Structure formats: C-alpha cells, structure tokens
Image (tube, rainbow, N blue to C red):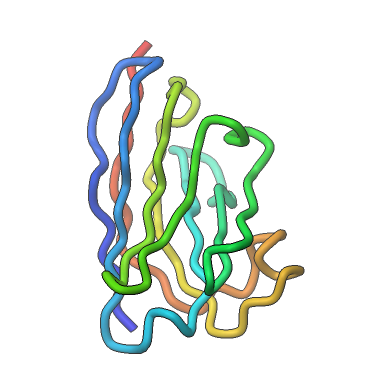
Length: 125
C-alpha cells in the first residue's frame, strides 16, 4: 500500500488548508484511514480518523470543530479540511491506513499499519 499526502503549505492564523492523501496498491475501501501530525521536538500525535464507509469519524480534542476528515472511496482519497488554523497546528502531517479498523482502534488512532510521507503545514501568527 502506498500513501501520498499533499496540500500542505504556509498559511496565516485563521486560514484554511485542505490536505489530500491518495492511496494505491490495494483496495482503498478495505482500510480505515487517519491523519496524524508531528511538530518539531514533539511526538507524533493523532489528529483524526475515519471508518471504511466514512460514516464514523473521530477527532483529537485539539482539532474538534475546526478540522474535518472525509474520504472518497471512488477516488482512493482521504481528505483533511483544516479551518481556523492556529500556530500550534504547525507540524508535518501524515496519512495512515488501518487494515483492521474497529471503532475502538479508530477512536484511539492506533493500529495504523501503513504510512505515507508527510506534508508540511506551517501556520504563521
């Protein structure tokens, strides 16, 4: 499974960005998907996950109400719409795939077996 994230960039605080992650190599609709981020000097952290159907989504408290995860199974793509961005959202953002997604795993952002290279998001104050 190959994952390719894109859409990062430099944005002012309060602005918006939309990240995309295209998955190839296996059947996209078999995987739960997630977004994670890692800021300089910090551990990687869970941002959001989405079930296979897209009917269930889970968010870290720090992004709830500002970020929206979605997926298009016909396009093998998962998205992260980020609004009201803050300087503390600055990080490298990674998409990941879980071949055995359950509600418990997705809610905690664990069980991701496949990872893409990240895309940098920088929010200036």
